[in-house]
Amino acid sequence: MNCDSLNPPRKIDETWQVDKCTTATCKGGSVISLNPVNCEPAEPVVCENGRPPVKVYDDSGCCFHYECECFCSGWDNSHYTTFDGTYYNFKGSCSYVLVKEITPNNGEFEVILDNQNCDESSSQDCAGSLTVLYKAQKVTLDQQDGKNKVFFNEVEVGIPFTNDVFTITGTQSEVDVKIAEIDATITYTRNTFSILLPYSDFSQNTEGLCGTCDNNKENDARLPDGTTDPSFTRMPDQWLLPTESNPECTNLPKPTPTPTAQTTQPTCKADVCDILNSKVFEDCQKVIPVDVYYTACQSDVCSNPEKHFGCSSLEAYASKCLSSGICVDWRGATNGKCEFNCPETKEYKACGPAMEPTCNAM
Image (tube, rainbow, N blue to C red; front, side):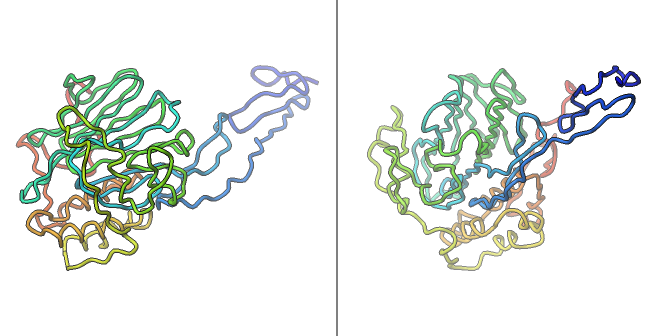
């Protein structure tokens, strides 16, 4: 007996999709049998970079497994964490490959860091720019006169900007570049950057200053020839890109690495760094380890208190928190040391929208 009372009517033993996780079968008359999709249990994953694993669904959108995310960051032009969470330190005033594919299969994705010459005697932080390459298109992120600048194929464009590859949004303090096709997000401020990539597409296929994303810290200091440099002594300048404007970058002295955060001890007391361990960041501390950023903050402030106020480390940690969906309004806790000055017509909001609202958006 068919299920004629259904809409549309179904024949006996006919099976159809109710939703992405359930099928139904006509058993006669108005009686149907609902059958949920049988998913394998998702195995737990511990991520070496300290980030919580994310659920990745299959094509049906019903079953999922856990994966770690590839998250690389840098701040103050001297501190870096690899995709797998290894912290190291070097200074260099040249262009470097942050990440590229070992075997190009995603439109030849690459991100380049261009560090400007850093005058240690200056009271101002030195700025670097980022260049994002994908499918023969290029986006450059820079700061000039305290303002974010975005260039597409060498031509300055306004924010927001969208084409068939890139979606670029931002505010006075931060710019986000998203590549939907590969689910990549690149975030840039004057003193910090971060790169977030999906493990499923980039696992074991990244190299550069961000290392190899494979949830294994042992090979993070990968060199272009495929070998590793566990001390990180030679690794950074192996990813140097000589340019016509910087010919001296072809023969730089080897940078001196800083031990990882687990073994580094602060050499002085820097009150601003204690904010990282305070209630201000309490919600984020439950999700993202703070030790690396606290160590970097102490190192900066203690080595050069006239120049370094520790703000970059707080900003970098706040950016990493935000990438996990946790917004922290932290600048007010620094007693004015880390204020962000907006133009007279604008107001700073740490947890404001990623794109400034305009009349055109109404």
